[in-house]
Amino acid sequence: MGRALGVLAFLAALLAATGAVAQFDPAKVVREAPAVAARYPDPPLRYDTPAFLEDRTDFTSLAEALAFADRLAAGSRHLQLTQAGVSQRGRPVPLLVLTGQGRIDPALPTVLVIGQQHGNEPAGGEAVLALAQLFAGPRAALLDRVNLLLMPRANPDGAEAFERATANGIDVNRDHLLLRTPEGRAVAEVIAQYRPQVVLDLHEFTVAGRWIAKFGGLQRVDAQLQPATVGNLDPGLAAATRREFAERVQAAWTSHGLGHDDYQTGSSDPQDRVVSMGGVQPDTGRNVAGLRPAVSLLVEVRGVGLGRAHLARRVHAHVVAASSVIDTAAALGPRLLALIEQAGRDTATRACGGELVIAARHSPARRQLVLVDVRTGADVPVEVEWRAADPLQVERARPRPCGYLFDAAAAPAALERLRLLGAHWQRSAAAGRWSVERYVVSAEAGGQRQDARGAIDDGDGPPLRLLRVRTEAADEAVDAGLVYVPLDQPLAGLIAAALEPDSQNSFAANHLLDPDAARLRRVMKRPEPGQLAAP
Image (tube, rainbow, N blue to C red):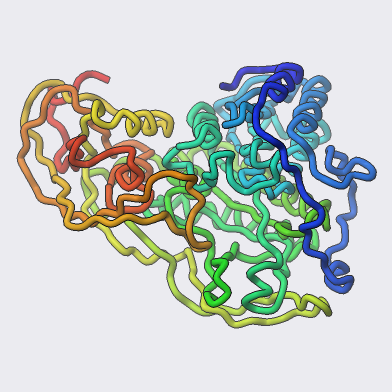
């Protein structure tokens, strides 16, 4: 990955790709009343990325995006077009690297912007192309203070088919811990290689659909925002994300006349009138990036179901948000690097002490939303049951271990996923006795992963193993060669999310590791000298 390639190589890969393309269907678009449409005028500037070509009726194809990026790279010494990975149907997952001196400068903050994880949300992908044009050209001087990584098509198969999920039916934005898709693995490898201090994920939210069915109105605001909200997130990083980044994005939207709110969603069940902020599980790009640790923000704009209506305004809302984030990262400079380093150190020093969150949920509340009347365009205030993602309610916690032991020969997929995430481990050096806790399964059921929208798109895999466990202390004989994954490292939150078996996103629940067969253990005392082989 990370190889510089010309557009011809990309297009050759495209021609070799398999699978039918079922692009955007204009017949399925929600038609707004004129009074509603008038509330969302085009921004006072013109974008000239491929989707805005004259007489355009659909969206930018992958081939067009690659050709556009290749032209930018040919005309700018600041931009390199590379390949992060290959999709399930053989399409390239492009990565655009923008730097001041032709290489990533580790003394500068690095910002990663991800577009179109969901293939039917094109404004994010188009905004990433607009950002490439902006920072390869008029704003290139800022690259002396910040490195920029842009992924315009994180789900190229879904984008070509104009479908939310990847080709095998898995939602890539719920695959950042399990890494079952090549698209999810491409994002993980970009993050592991470049270690960005900031990750920005661009999406679009549903405008009509469930909102009309439940509340008789359309979503009103132009944009919604949510930082990482997940158990075991470093509190100092969470506070700085809100103060230094989220509040500035909101101020930028206001200055551009763009309405905004917290991100909000709900199930497709018309009888379920609960409205929730975004998910609190360690599975989305937003939450996984926050646990790496990094400043991590989700930006959603008003778009799903609207077809090409207000596309310039939707892209503009993304560009305004991303520009604010990039400007803030550049302005903070060494302070941002120090913030992320400190969050990693603080996470590592919590090993062997305190509480570890195993499962958390939203906090119940009530609040008022303001929607838009579908005919008149007037504001429609609605009082709703609200589920807040901050603060979280902890459902289950247990003492934080020093690390985990398991037999990788019995769980090779688990070890490979930990490698892709960037975790570090060692092997037990010789047979000896360790202070551990065993997992004892007291109940097991099948099921499907859930979030605030309902069941998660997980393809055709087997049902989850929903385990109920307790732990029991033991002084246990440990063979040489077992894998020891310590928690005194910055990725401790992700490691725990993967290896504690009794949560819906764990490797055990998702058949990547059997706790009994792999002899998974919680290590409750730091290994003595000689118990571990040299790294």
